Length: 186
Image (cartoon, rainbow, N blue to C red; front, top):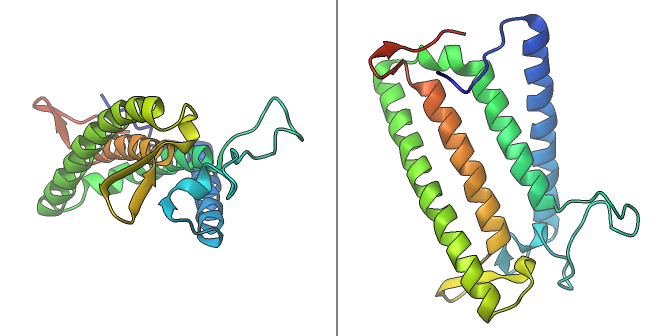
């Protein structure tokens, strides 16, 4: 059973193309936002303002009930983009030469295993650091292994959860069989 939904009508295909385009533009917007505000801590520009206040779009003063962080837009757009991409191209991907599919499948399984580990690690680290560094989850920073490399844990966690879903979609699109049975077409 596949979790992907390859489009079978023009309307379904058009919907996926629109979703792919909108999520791609959102990813581009987040990338530009990140590039114009470089920080010492990786991912912090998508979570906090330079002064350390939460970065919310639109600001809570404009919309007190609905606002989100750019990292949340990055997370959602990454999942929608990868789902739309793999749904649109699943049939083409399954027709790749077996040696290419095997290599890509191996990389997708590696991505899945790394992202599962990182998500579990980040949630554990997040809990510990909130007790020792700050009670505000947006300010938690992983400084390991030390030196100049530091990463905002909110950013790291959402990035690895998005990678987890991307890996699942990739594995689904790359496999031709499941438990010895032919993969479902469509």
